[in-house]
Length: 590
Image (cartoon, rainbow, N blue to C red; front, side, top):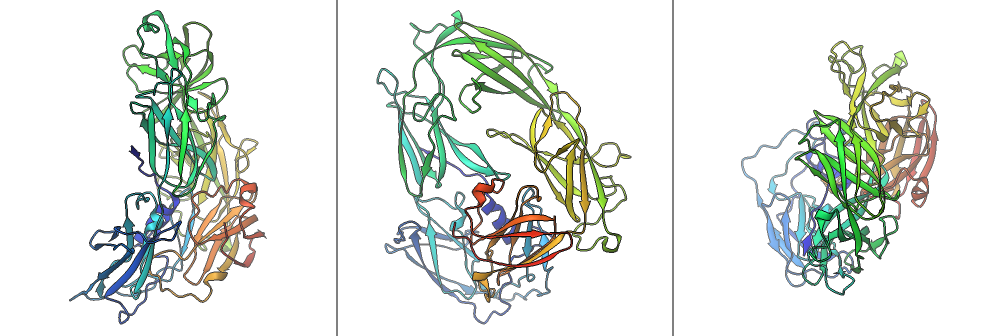
């Protein structure tokens, strides 16, 4: 059985930034009570199943630092006792900034805060979590980390039951495909778009059985990997051909796009059957030019114009070639490598038709893309509401802080690869920034301004706010031109359900407000409100936005898809330069 680890989510980033301090000196999203008279020395609670709401017995309840721990009884109840601290002088309670900007790029996030919290006099945890076999562990679902106020006496911790995907791989002769690898992909959101991410692989046992456990609710796809036929009677690799089993995409599709989508609910177990068919395979050899022998290469193979994982070729370190075996079909082979932080890429078309195939691919260096930043600031407001100053008259020069954060994100649906950041040029006298060694491909350009807002983002005649940046292999590219202005709009808002609330919960965010641009308006902004629901954002680019609030962070928010966003309850607001808009929003039911 395979139990999957987790990968960082937006919920983790928000929790880490808010609770541990994402910016100067440690910023808390909410102010803890300043008094200590009401701090409790006993905390009682219950652990329940988040789906059935039934109690969970024999669960381990512990603090995030592991200093406090206990077990629940058969009815899911637990109790913790704490001691008072001694000889500890309280810290000062000087207020912090009203609003701070975090560096969780590409999610520019504003945290509205009341100040820096003082410590308590009772040694008790600010967070509790619970662990139990059959339920998602805290690393997989950080929603199980519950903030506990210092005057709180009762708490409920909800554990999410794990989902599973189980099944068998059966070969045409009815035998189980022992040793065949089964791959599981999950649909995730990156840069506001849906991507397919490999979250685990399991190897079928003797009867072909496979099992994936510890899965979150979500959307998945499943397939069996290629399996060569080792029968010496029917396969002879020396003859340049053999037999094998191509990938089988559940249920019996020939490519990833044709495979069925598996929708998993919390606690659900999904049964799947995979039945790969035997096909004739032929030897393939591809020479590589432009690289160095022994240099690691990444090889991706697409069949018949269908992108996605499944077919594979390998790299031979001995002669620097790419080889393996493939069934009949037309293939696009993409080869990439990193050399001294500069990307090398090459593409070639390969046709396999009833016999061995060969070809040659040339690796071309990545392109250095220049970034030019211009300011159209109103002099009377120079520096107003700035978090980061400009230390030089040359934006991006060595003596200054970077005026923007610019990032190139691949638009590929699979294996998006590394992301590329703009940095100061190596030439000490050069102005502007440069994105070095960008491989051929299409990229979404994300920009966050340290002052003002991004008024224009272009490359030649292409508006990069609406269209991707296209880089050709080994070719030069026009500079990316960024225009900044400081006459942005301001939104002062409040969340209806939090009106009148104080700071009883000292640790967890009160909510999450997403300010999502309608086409062409700019980048999405995430704002953490104050405990009473008030929030503010300044220097917002003129345009139309959808403002949506949630009680929990939305890791699956497909904010670049207007149809997907229309299902959420919120407000649509249009702002012009210098406008100040007041709004009230309610938590979205979705």
